[in-house]
Length: 349
Image (cartoon, rainbow, N blue to C red):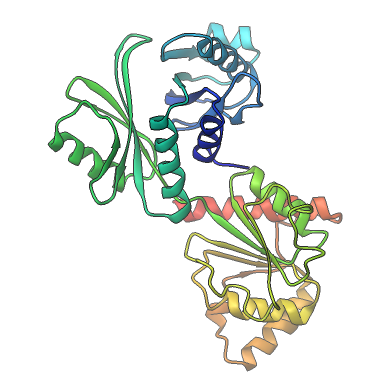
């Protein structure tokens, strides 16, 4: 699945206006947390979600009305009282959602292009929305990108010292923040590189696994040495499908860091062992290998003889996935992705 930045860039480049709907505050039990956002257009299905249900349906409807002519505004939902009954929801909190219409222009395309480039290359930066408001009404709204080197793309009606302070605050943040600066409410959205999942092996389990990983927000890279298996037709939802000369050094030239996930799903024990040996040379935060405990133990024993330490082997999740009694490829994929979501939460703590 494309990220918010990629989707917005694509839509605006095609001349399609959109609404960026963002949860700016939440209290109590709500479907999603502050900072969650989605892109709404007139005809395409929304990308992203702010929690589903009738709240999201209402926001989609109101966003599409704004695209026919209307200014940015806030919508509030009290999920602890009347809205719960009217929307058949069991949450008990409050939500405030900014509906931010953005129309195609050279400036808007350039802005979201910059956002997606920061995301892709992991350079870091901050997406900034500065606005003045009167209750739910937004009187003025500005958008900009703050780069790590101090550059600004877009326009902010703030003094240079204020912009420098915002850049410092945003760069150190791990989640959306709202500050009040020089009569403006300023929303700071730190631009973080999406977690990358390297799926090595493009067989029958890899297909549903890659698809589900893309659905939950991973940037998915599928690697195999068989073009008949590793091709965009079989993996239409992923970021990259790459055919390798062999599986002896699959991560050569890849950017594998502590935020990366490696999923080993090759077609045989020897391939798994070769890939695992190279995976353990990386800084990947998660390494999982498919197979039985017997297969794992045999591979581990071979790697020990080659000098791999016990501490290194402790990094490996094998058999891969949560133990849910999975049997079919789709069920195995569910178990793998569930385990990766749990590990991702640990990495973010």
